[in-house]
Length: 84
Image (cartoon, rainbow, N blue to C red):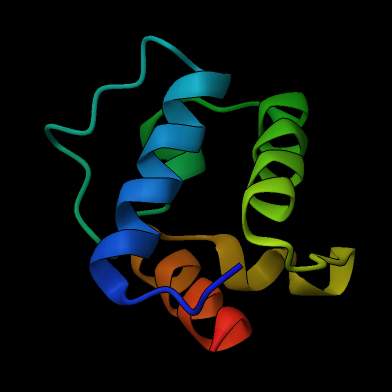
């Protein structure tokens, strides 16, 4: 996949979260909030999200990378860095 910029990465992350958790409401989720807590994603939802992000970007996301996928801002930065 082509390198993502921050806007594209954020759009992708939100789309993937919405696919995993259709009721996800980003209204009150700030870039530095832990989105798993804010959106009530359980472990299975998170793993599904990781798989979707990996499929859509072609980026291999290992368990060691999970700490970098805590907030929307961190996840966006990880994807921008990993696709660039």
